[in-house]
Image 1: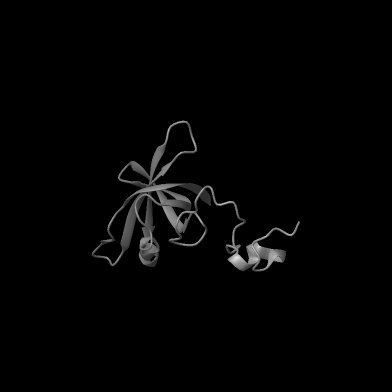
Image 2: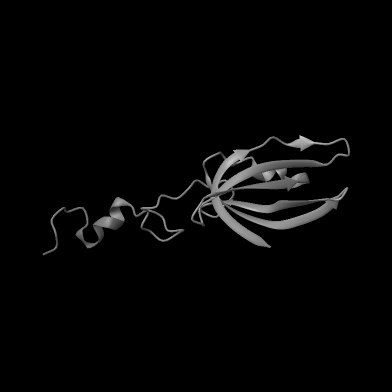
Length: 126
């Protein structure tokens, strides 16, 4: 099991084959190294729908396996995705703003919460 994160660069259409096999490919640009890398992943069978809530340019985290095989004396490597999440952790979740200072999962305080002991009076308590 491997994981990487980056920005969605391209999402392909679902490809169906005569055998009933389906697959969908997508590319994620990672910035973990000095030079950004474009990594092509594939999702197969019923997991093709995992990409539906995502859009190009969105930050994602991808969990995948490396698959290798030989065919007619040539060797191939595929990055087989089995889980994809938006940057906030939920599939298709919008990217969180970098300046959001609150802890994850906490709701924004209401005006009443901000008033605290002051109540409806706008005067400070001192």
